[in-house]
Image (cartoon, rainbow, N blue to C red; front, top):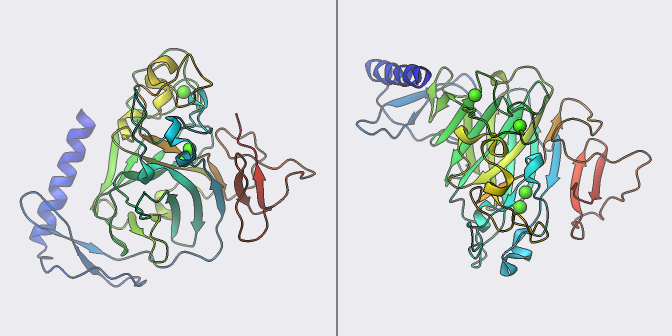
Length: 349
Ligand SMILES: [Ca+2]
Ligand SMILES: [Ca+2]
Ligand SMILES: [Ca+2]
Ligand SMILES: [Ca+2]
């Protein structure tokens, strides 16, 4: 509570200083990369519209990704009120783009199809591709983001969240960055469910919100200008500790809440439910629902597959064959790409 109060105070002081600084001439935010040239972004506020001065705005993503991970397409089994695979509550892997209980509402807008990570000198970019709806359109009507685990212990350290992104131009509006200052995300057993449900406070410290924070340029979002089903989220490299980390993408509705991490420590498997009918003791979804995530990709180092939560790593010699160019993998195998190439791999567990 004290922290929340402090954060509120900081936000309030920043609002006041922004007003006093006289930066009240809103200018439409530009998408081109303009480094060190102040640009003013109008920020929605309840009582007034103070403006945020930006010095750095992300530009185009690099051509080559640092990692890519496919994810299950739950539309394939939605009419059977179940997910096809890819959900292991115990290991913090979710494939739950459905409502609780009946599981008769499927949410294509939070069903991750693939995720990738890119890096340049200034930014790390996480991208999330979702499923198109019945009208063949993609609607980002949920929450989207990524977790960064920079000491590679399985417990997330930073969470970036973008709420209902709608613009193809980079914006900080509705983008939040949360920090786990007291390092309790993951509980006693990092990356797996704790034996007893814990009272962890998850990501309790908000360090950025809509351009307000110590660094007004810390995090941005846009819908890809060339792919209306992909959202791109940029985080300043300076917000990270070190240049080796695990990054994992998320999509969800209300359950994608900073305070609920790790979801599998706050409730039991019985309470959470399962989207898989083969887990008959746990099916259907209960308290943990309308949520999807992807295995974590390694950035800045070559993973050996033992890192907590990491995506499958092809064993050597590689027996899984890469898909033909331009083709995806036959279900239930999933496409994974690392600096060693792209492969169709059976989902883990
Ligand atoms: Ca998933
Ligand atoms: Ca999915
Ligand atoms: Ca845990
Ligand atoms: Ca915490």
